[in-house]
Length: 167
Image 1 (cartoon, rainbow, N blue to C red):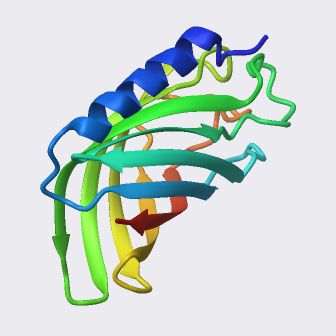
Image 2: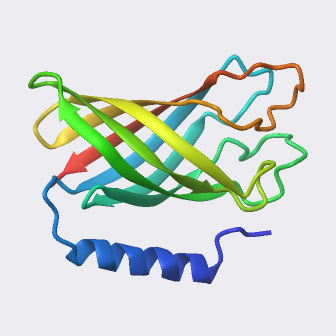
């Protein structure tokens, strides 16, 4: 079953168009999602999560290959791709090379995993390689009991890695 249906693509395109013409006080970004690392999990999740997002006017939308892709998870019935949206609640600089942000949002998993919608609370450290090129290291705490293959596991959340190009 394919969870990303044409109506999802149309919604994503509409949101991109709306965000494209919205006034922006911050830099807009193209985000390349790269990887995750599930902390203290008994289950072997997929940790390679390529995807694309666009961030405009502090709102990011995009897609990524989720952590259930190509695993033996009995709850993974979809194609392994998820849609997400995040809003940057707070952003700042620590110095000329390091910054931070706090993002809030939702990820849509469809038939993958035990829940269709999963909340996102993600603090990130930003490493500015140049003024426009940024590596983002984030942490997503686990607030709901997500399936990880072991009912006795105490998963502590996950680390995320992405790259942003600012314009």
